[in-house]
Length: 399
Ligand code: AMP
Image 1 (tube, protein in one colour):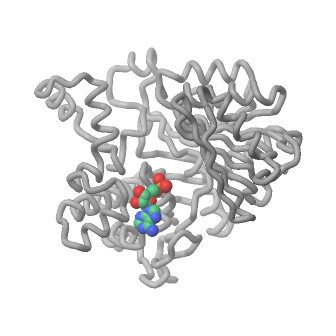
Image 2 (cartoon, rainbow, N blue to C red):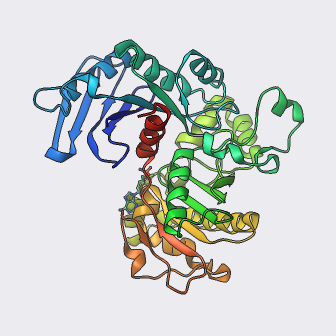
Image 3 (tube, protein in one colour):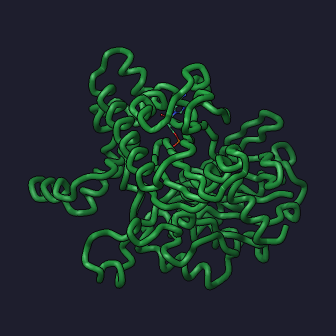
């Protein structure tokens, strides 16, 4: 079976054609510079083939057309006709309070995604463009929306409400939503399997540490809390995002430097985080580790701050869950950063986290990295949001 998974951004569109049963990816790629000129990079893993083509992409429709054309291309194609695409699954950023799970795309679903634009002003319009482009180019093909926020909708009001006047919650739906939900769901489900299939009451903390980072506290398979909020700016310091910050810092900067709220938010989203703490060296953890190894104190501070805040979140989530059975690291840094994992876990021995230094050397593979005696089992589990999207799509479309 072939599910086309689409992740549409404002000027880019990522795609994968995959089998939801096996996770095998027959083709994947990226359309860039949509609205400017347009470039397609297409890979066929089985042939170790990669091709880049400049193709005019004034809108997302031309981008989707280019993807479909290359999927049936004589040289780089992987299917002989578009009839072989069974359904399309879309990553959609913000589902607001309306979407607690994935759904088949119809007019009502699209309208609800549109209504969530004020909550996800950058991503939801782009996600809709991806959906509408597919409708235009492949009329009648079943489509499914998978929301980044949905997994977190099981949080209780004490976790998701902000302590601000109720009118902002009731009138404007301002609350914690959380993101990376598809990753947190995939990884916590896999953790439960690895822990012997016992999900009831299993207490898991998932650390999704990448360019964007978030944690979730999961009990019995249901999310209890997560570190991102109304937007992905909240929680840990990230590649270029500040993470949690006293709102008065923003007020001070806006007043002193005559910045608008949007300008200040842009600075907090794009020029902050470990990029800022390293004095502009990099938002990439590999560069920071290389810099710190050469004695760059700002790079070391950036790493220390990231690891310290992650450790603090784990402690607070263990308290919120009333204990911890399993700690999981995933995403770019979580899967590939033994040093970061070791530093994060160093102060967690008091609650039964004990890493095995040899096992912890793993990069990019699923592995148990705690000692046999560790009370809390610590795992590296590579995330696969695309597979989760493909599986939801196949299930909802009855494939
Ligand atoms: P993601 O957003 O999940 O793709 O993660 C991207 C981040 O993962 C990059 O900023 C890198 O810093 C980090 N990363 C990827 N590979 C490694 C590695 N081998 N060692 C340390 N960090 C890595």
